[in-house]
Image (cartoon, rainbow, N blue to C red; front, top):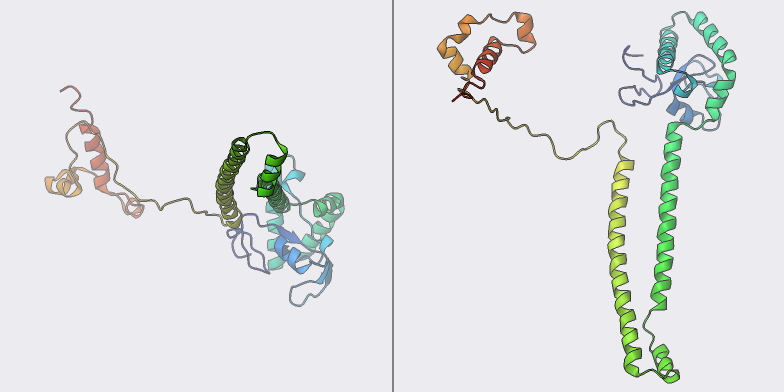
Amino acid sequence: MTTANHRICPKCKTSEFQNRSLVMMLNECCHPLCQNCVENLFARNVAPCPYEGCGKMLKRSGFWTQQEDDFATLREFNDYLERVEEIVFRLVNELKVEETEQEMHTFKEEFAEAIERNRRRPTKDDLWVKAMLDEEMARRSKVQEDNSERRDRSGSVKFNPKAIIEELRSSDLPAEVVLDRQRKKRIEQEMADKEEMIRRKRDKQEEKLRAKERATFGVIRPSGKPYYHSQPTLFLNGPPVPGDEELERSGCLQFVRQAPPSSVAGGYLARIGCTRAILEAHADLLNSL
């Protein structure tokens, strides 16, 4: 623990400031780790404790934590998180270690069923990954169906001279009618190909947008052009307000109480109050003219 405001994993040094969804967990030997470290270090369910000088063999099921769904109100969940932070702080700084270990042991026995249920229940990240995979599988299936349908349609209207000759030989229709019907089919196929090309471009653009959304995991996302400040236009409907230099030359500031050092440190100056008073006095003076 480096600060009281942000939780931090002693192993990977990831803080709550860097990862807003940071989840801290405690193992049987009372050493705290974040959920990502637990998943990476205990991928085979059994591994030694990564803390130097410990080396105790641990099971992944020995780590426990609770989620927001386990509490009736958000306040109770926040109280639980604060309690976990306090336990981690004690263990890291070796304060009341025996008392803290006893509290952890009591908690583990009391909430053994909830701990096991949370271990097996998928997290929000797991559900998000599953939703992305399902969406990708559905998209690929749709693309395969469209490609198959397009191939079937293209094969059915493909120009076939032998078929035309056979139709002319076996049919009583004039040759102009048969050829005109074939030309119509070819025109319809060309229109369908153009629509298919437009649809492909649209699908590619949508896929690029989805890829951008999936690839951005930071707290701050790009949201267009940088902000550019432009001075707003003030419709005073009265005489213009003098500027800072004009206020000093006119001597108006000598009748204004000077700002104390504490106010100056916050950015307040005497001319700000003077300018505001003149602005309020000049506003809407020309309404009656």
